[in-house]
Every structure is written in C-alpha cells, then in structure tokens.
Image 1 (tube, helix red, strand yellow):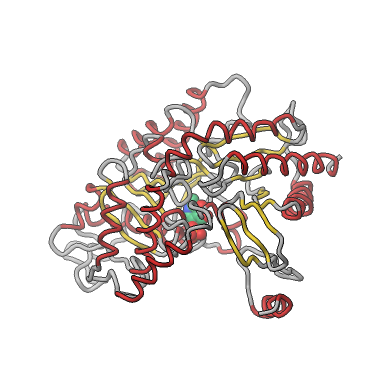
Image 2 (tube, rainbow, N blue to C red; image 1 turned 30 degrees about the vertical axis):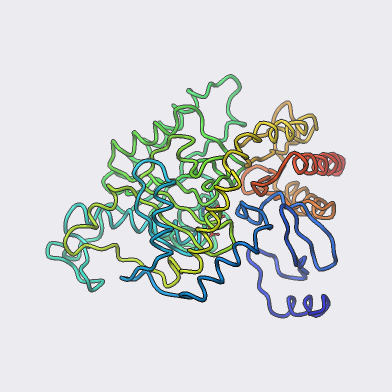
Amino acid sequence: MAATDLRQLASDHLWLHFTRMGGHAPPIIVRGDGCYLSDDEGNRYLDALAGLFSVNLGYGFGDEIGKAAHEQMKELPFYTNWTYAHPRAIELAAEIASLAPGDLNRVFFVSGGSEAVEAAWKLARQYFAVRDGGAWKVGVDPGTRIPGGGSSPQKKYKAIARNIAYHGTTMGALSINGIEALRAPFEPLVPEVRHVSNTNRYHRPAGETEEQFTAVLLEELERTILEMDPETVCLVHMEPVQNAGGAFVAPAGYWAGVRALCDKYDILLSADEVITAFGRVGHWFASERYDIRPDIVTTAKGLSSSYAAIGAVVATERVMEPFLADTSMYSHGITFGGHPVMAAIALKNIEIMKREGIMEHVLSNEDAFRSTLAQLLDLPIVGDLRGAGFFYALELVKDKETRETFTDEECEHLLRGFLSHRLFERGLICRADDRGDPVIQISPPLVATQAQFDEMTGILGDVLAEAWEEMH
Ligand SMILES: Cc1ncc(COP(=O)(O)O)c(C=O)c1O
C-alpha cells in the first residue's frame, strides 16, 4: 500500500497507545534488521530502546523464528492450557524452569506483562486463601466455596510496590503502578496498594553510604507493612532494576532485607522481570544476578524477544504446593495463555539466545557500554548515569552542582517539545521520559556492539548539547 494511503488510514482508524492523538501523524516503521529500523520514507534509525525494552535479539531473526512459527502452525495452530497441555507449552515451561534460579519451577502462561502482573497478584491472594484452608478455596466449579469459606472476604489481599514503578495497565497491574498520573484517571482502583520509596540514590544526601540508604528504605518498607497490617498484605512486587524513573539499581543489602521482611511477615515477594529477564542485565533472570530469591517472577517481553505476544508467571514449589492438594486450583485462565505458536516462538528465541551467547555478550560488553555512555557525563545537562547490563538511564539536570531538576513545564518543553523529536530526526530511538525526574532511557537489542554504543553516544552528545542551549 502506498505511503500516503497508509497515513490516511492511520489517521482515520488507528488509535495509538499512550498517544496524544489530536493532529498526531505517527512515523510508520516498515522494516527491522539487527539494531536498526526503517520508516516508509526510507529513513534509518538505531533502535536504542529495543522496541519497548523487549526485542532482545534485535530484528534480524525473522526467518529462523518464522520457520518455527510456521512449523507449529502446520502442526497445531492453537490449543488451550485450560485443563489440556500441548508439547510446546510443556517444553517451554520446562525450559523456563531450567533457566530460572532456585526452585522457581512452575510456569503459568499469559499473553503479556500486564497480564503477568495481574496474575501474580491474583496468585498471591489465592495462595494465602488456599494455604490457610478454606476461605475462597474453590472447587472444580469456579465460585463454589469449600466448606469453611463462608462469605468472609479474603484476608491477605493487599500489595506493596514502589513509587514511579511501571507495572502495566490492566486494572490490577495499574493499581500496582507507582505512577500517579497513570492511576488517577481510573480511580477507584483495586484495593489496596501502598507505594514505598524506590532506590533512586541520585537525590539522596551527599555522603550517605549504600548501607545507610538500604536501612532507610527497609525501615520504610517495614513501617508500611505494619501500618497496612501484615495479616492483610499478600504481595511485595518490585523490579530488580526499576525502569521508570531511570534504571534504578538497588543499594547493597536491599534485596536480602526485602526478602527477610517478606519472610518475617509472611508475604510473597514477586520480582517483576518483564524487562529484566532474558538477558537485559546479562542473566536469564536478574533475580539471579542480584540474589533476590523471589517467590514469584513475572516475565514477558524478552521471553520471545517480542516476536510473539507471550508472558509467564513463574512460581516456586512452595507457592505451587497448596494448589496441588485435593480440589484446589488457581482460578485464573486466559484463552491465549500458552498459545502453541507463541510458545514455539519463545522456544526458538531461547535457543537462538543460547547459540548466540547473548548472556555472555551482555556481560562482556556492559563495562564498555557504560564507559562509552559515561562520556556524556561531561555535558552540563547530564547529571547521572545509572543501570546495568544493556539497561541504562541518563538523568538530565538544570544544575549539576545542586542536582536541581527541571520544572514540569520545562520538562514538557525539554522532553516532548525538543528531545524526542530531535533524537528521532537524528536517527536515534530512545526514550525521553519524565515519569520521575527527566531521564533518557537506553536499552538496545542485546546484539548491539561497540559500533552502536559509539553511534548512540555520538548522537546523544550532539542533541543533549543542543538541549542545554535550548533550555538557556
Ligand atoms: C516492569 C514492567 N511490568 C509490566 C509491564 C507491562 O507489560 P505489557 O506492556 O506487556 O502489558 C511492563 C511494560 O513495559 C514493564 O516494564
């Protein structure tokens, strides 16, 4: 179809996600190869965001992955995980279990990240109900309460997450989100979530050690659990490296402390690895890198390198255990969960990642990537560089000495009025984001090499220098 026709049809019919649609003429991306994308006018872009932090293998494996999808289509295009199994779901579950740390051995498939988070919270709610015998324990017919259940509400149902963290958009996942602006239009939300501080160190007092910061954070988490009543809290849900706000890595001792508090108050710890799993920080699961020891892991994007719409909730044997007894079941299901074609694609993705040595590539290049990006710290507008693996953020500041941030109006102009547009014009896709303080998020395909590190740093350097002029 001709480019002009596509534009007209887009303008007439396509409703874009998180987009101010009035007068918006979207770029039309028509092709991908390796770390690069092309639009319908033949312009080429370095995709330093890997789609949405998700095309971990890059765009170059369509042939091979397509063949796996085609074979599966011929063999069995669809069957369900409701009561039945099929070979690809079984193989993929076993593969994920073998890659996941500890006894995270039980895999429940969904179609994406929000559904995974939704399912994790529901799982935590029902886990305690079933484990503690009775209330809301359901039989074969969903909704049938086992004797003893009565009509009493679930006791442990609340969740704790962190400020500015993004966890998806379905009502449960949205309620867990720590981004006020995303939640507000949809209130009242699902009861009941409280948000604690994230691990942003950049604006902490000068001289504070990591250990001191950890102590402050853990004290707040414990206080919050106590205020909410530990008897009612079922889930602590956090990303190993928090994306929104800009690649926050936790300070020393944080994860051990969070784990200990969850144990102390009998709460399940869920690691949201929708971004961080499948290589983003050089491990199949970031929980392994940071020794998080979660009870539940949510994953999606990189599981298929986004060649398919598939996600998973991975649970430990302990979480599974009550659901193995008599008539218990996890009362949740999604038609496309474990879709055989999606599962075949994810299996092929993992096979290619192993063959191409993606984990090794990320780990052996992360220092070079970081130090290339660190050249940008010489610019007056770049206050901080943080992250790990192939997952970084640059925080932009008005004053490097005082670490003063830009006002909301200035951010609007800097990020949406200038940077996003100018970076794209220069052939670089990354995200200028102000869900927290203003940051540039960088998360390229995991096949990127020094040539791409240099290219993105070169363009960022030019454009951020212009941005400084623009703001003064
Ligand atoms: C950490 C995290 N959790 C959940 C989600 C939601 O995933 P999806 O957009 O696939 O629903 C995202 C999406 O960006 C995410 O980054």
